[in-house]
Length: 173
Ligand code: NI
Image 1: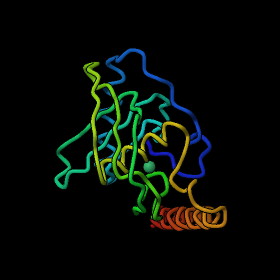
Image 2: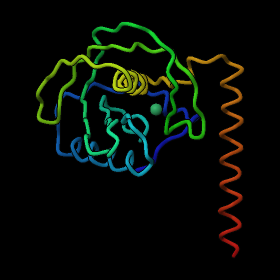
Image 3: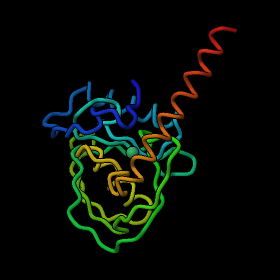
Image 4: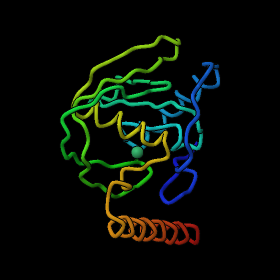
């Protein structure tokens, strides 16, 4: 399992609603958590690992021991927009202020097929909005101007080239 990075067109795929929670789906959620922790992220959408089903994982706890798995998450209410700094495992090495609702109400199903409705605020609210965007094929940098997004593209290309050069060097030694 690998995390796709911008500008990979697969990140633009719209996720399908999950109709049945299979063992394979549960396994994918566990694998997503594993890779999210490994990369020190606070959230990951299935889209980012090239699985186009509506599911996300989140853990905003400091000790990274409060995993949340949400299947078919939908925001049903939001309020109080504010700028918050965001990053994304699919846009490595870049952060930006994005306007997001600070309070949201969402519904989702857990892996035991139990539906819940919850009010959340702050980082959790921002994170859920960010991950649900992924399921729609949307990235946080889509909220930026074209010029800024072009800069991100250049930056990521440069970072990847540096990484490749470093790997080549290591291979030779
Ligand atoms: Ni992201």
